[in-house]
Image 1 (cartoon, rainbow, N blue to C red):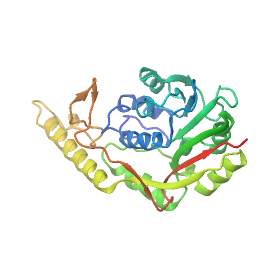
Image 2: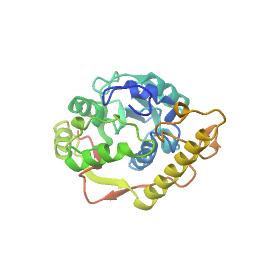
Image 3: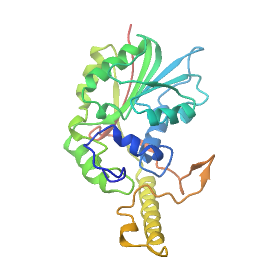
Length: 279
């Protein structure tokens, strides 16, 4: 894998340890996860009762947390990667080290379950869906987003995306992408009627972001090459996760506005789902 500095199989969880420093870099390897977290949080209404619980499956470093602030939920995050969970805890998430196909939480405990950009990383996504639905109380809300199992999705999310600045190679295994109709049917089998819609980054914002990343990578490459005593071996092999902005509260900030996730007519690549549990 390019950015982690060692070769790993596609979708290997160890990649997230290697990239642990990238989670809170808005222009880094997980930039799009920031955009998607904001869009996912927009689907979550304010809590309807005191002590409401939101379970965040595959929470990573807690990128959803800032967008839930003030909504009234206790935010519990479940993830396999301890290095990510430590960062999630620092952002106010109650961290649970666990597998999303066997979550160590009680039936019906959650008012909301969020499953963002996780199902396409799970070898058995149906078990993860069953767990998400099991955790929901009657009337509870499921929100998710994932990649569709289509040729277009594999082309854009793997072959093209992995050539872009900061996008890690091997982060996805396209064999695990999730068919939208099959996902809706599986949720219905567990009592959740899921409404789906396609989403994508807004084109103007995405083009601006890409331009900033390419320029930043070029500046970093030139600066490294111009260092006194630099050799060819010292120069970066790829424009990976280079930051050119300042900092906000000790964290890097992007040099321009982040792209917004917007609805689109097709679910063929990236899509959101939202539904409530019956009963």
